[in-house]
Length: 68
Length: 513
Image (cartoon, rainbow over all chains, first blue to last red; front, side, top):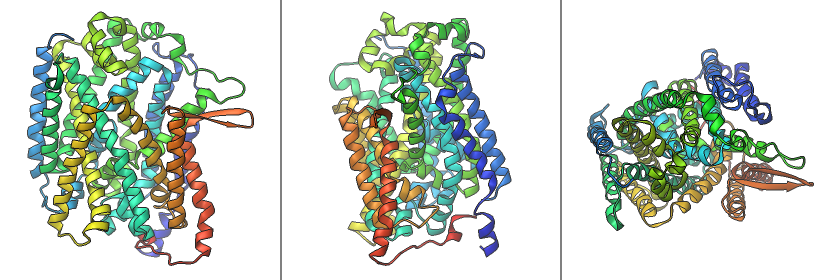
């Protein structure tokens, strides 16, 4: 609880990684299409499912790179 | 529908009997004194990363979700998939905001968001507003869990005339009420483990087996009307379905972890680190949710909607019957039992946590604040136990005597209401800049305007905001929380200029390890 630990945990640039998923997923027109399909699943669906995995990885990276 | 599916029913009953035993046995799990509110209502803050993963997963991905999201895909198509980006974006928010809330609540022994707001702003009225919002937003959510249960019970062919038809639901309800009363949060935490495993098995079997039966995903999507496969491309003077989709995603994501049951799940973790870890681990549930959403399309492709075998079910439950009908159509009876038990138990877990969370709020932020200021620890825990019963009983009466449509409309309003606590709670863990009265007025205006907007569009989720010849249809909750925030920002300097003491029971070091 000393001053140093307060400063250290205030901000880390790694947190910006968490913004990436907001940008990609809120840009709806960029993925509202059929092609390319993946094992018969339209792009709209598999793209968003793929982001589930990417977001988990991004959050894991931030978890290991920052301290609580 | 006419005949009882005995095999499925037997499997269902056996699994239900098992979780009933588990719910009562849970009282002795990581045992604590259940006459203390934080032991009964937060499981003594003893749950590590893994149990927290099961608990929050069991809490957020409810039976209603499993029924309603595919039902929306079945009826309306691509828009239903908003649940997936929504359930992705809740986790960066969980990761950034809620470990801080965990630390400050642990430090000051806060049990609810109302406790936190009371300490942070020293204003009992703002705390009351946050607490009442939480309770009122949660009630219809509990009712909808019971609807999920009703649908699977009906799908097993149990029907009757008049009140006899409601007997199975009553039995499930009594079980739920009894183990929640006796074991507190430990009951849903232990049952969540069973529920999540059953749901995972069901989702993965369904997403592999049904496309194989159907001859591949190409065939399934070919059977879906083209207008349902993608979002409609908006015209030149509107942001159309794109704006609706994006605001539904963002608005729902902001609101989710402010629901009392989510906060209860988070605060019961044993460390802030466990909460942070879960920010990275919980998305695995979102993947499963996406698979379940696709089942709405499987249901279209199998033609269960026009199959006379299921006509009675669709007539009674509407599109909510899509998933049960799909399971009945595609699985052997014993696995139907497993799948339905997953949904049924998936109703009990969140219903239990929601009633506990509402009880904690009432006990701490209404009863203790305004009625009996100095209850003994035992009295406090006892009040919470009784309130958890009353809350559930209210939800049951609602489901039995009021058309389901009202519960759905109230649940939509609940989303609009709970998001109005973003400035006080979510921004409150980062900054004490806002004036408490400015926050209260922002909350009141946001709630009133949001409710009016929702009523004016007859409880559609999206409101067509018109501006300068353009229309921006979007999620009402999202628009009104902005209004709320702007009011709080504008009024803060005004109230500060009027003077008054700035109270804050917390210091910056309370918010992290």
